[in-house]
Image 1 (cartoon, rainbow, N blue to C red):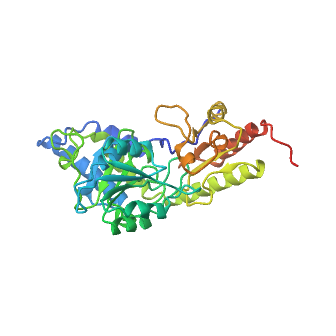
Image 2: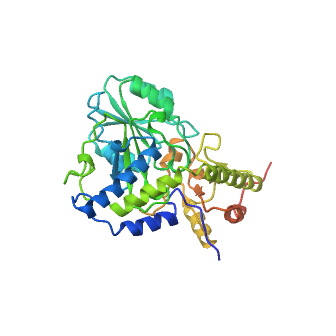
Image 3: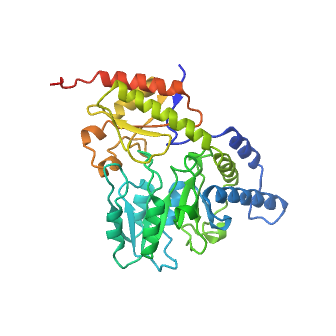
Length: 377
């Protein structure tokens, strides 16, 4: 049986060009060494840094390599030494990834959660009210949600944050490679990206910071990454990350193709199951992401049934430990538990073809047909 992978938001398969670059880079030396082998490794790291900077619309000196998106988000919580003054509180949206939510709680600062509307978009009036307090804040709002794909109005949010003398950090991990990134255009002070979401190896990520912003190290050591992250760099992973970023810059046509596939899949689901609920369908979304459910279905059962049918997807609330739990994102949107408990996330990617979506539609609608529904009056 042919398997179809529809879980790109969890991780994207490593690109062949990236794999080849990683294998070659395994022979490089320590980039902190001053001899020729070290200089070659340093040049490879700096070339990758320039590629990531171009990918993020940042400057190379502002890119800090990390072990992944989670570490980058944790490092962002240290952005307190800034022209705005040392922040004393953190404002996070109610739909942030756990990497931001847990890091904020561990920061020792006062944490305020910002509400979202029924579509999953941040309530701008709620943001204004939270910013009205005189104390400077670090505002953390993701560019795109990993479960629903909702894209937040970051440029508008950034203008409000700047007007109040606060800082804005944007978790762009899920958006990277799917929509364009540009630190200056978005108006944020820092953003996080992760390699394995764009076809690089797991264990690579970066925090991109605008010029003039200080990043106190979370890991102390030999002064690597301009003193912002100690420890010998993961040279092979970083090289692969840089190659993946360079390839992703040219994926606009693929994004258009994927968006058409996603929309056709959702139309087919609606045509066959009238009471399906596609979450955030009327909000700006990533082109590859669909989160949907049906009252009476259970996510774990659906994911298992799809897996047996050769389709890989995630539950809307799939977490890092591999368990299925109630979605805090759908809770924040006010979705009733009977509906949210059956949500799944389907995320398409560069290798997705129409056959994968067709099998998804057939399998899911068969499960839906087994439910007993009240007879129409």
